[in-house]
Image 1: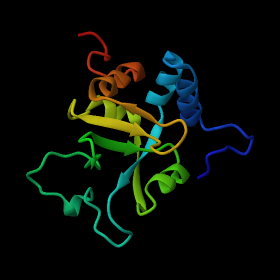
Image 2 (image 1 turned 180 degrees about the vertical axis):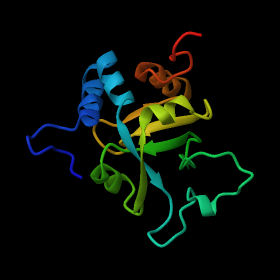
Image 3 (image 1 turned 120 degrees about the vertical axis):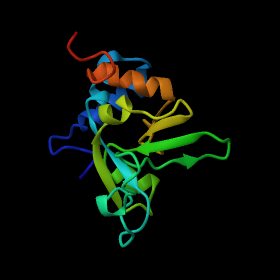
Image 4 (image 1 turned 30 degrees about the horizontal axis):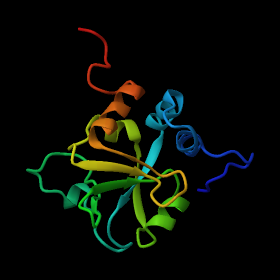
Amino acid sequence: MTDIHSNGALPPAQQALHEIAQGGENVIALSTLALSDVLLPVPGGPGDPDPDAPEQQDPAAPQGIQLPVYEQEDGVKLVPVFTSEERMAQALPGTHRYRLVPLSALSGSWPSDELTLSIDTGSPDALSIAGPGVRALAALSGSGPGSGPAS
């Protein structure tokens, strides 16, 4: 996976991040981002057991994907996601595995206002979104609460 398509254009998610970084709030760019798939790092080395694999999960635990949470020196808790393998490798060189997940799926079930979503950490177009903003992304993608058909 590369950051640039064969035609020289950035992938849609990276183009959206770039537009947001250049011009502030852009609803079209945010919607594009919300509809994109992102790489969610799976902590551990290549030989470590996958914590999200069914055989590794506690049957009594709720089903779902385990979010990798990194705490910064200032106490902010981040969940990093990436738009490409290259950007993930630059920011987290020791991470060898990931899950490809729709950003809307993450944002629609964001667990806490205390967690910040960090998209493409370490890149010039990195974007950090606080908990309430993460859940707002789900509404932009049409998968948030109340976005389904009226009953």
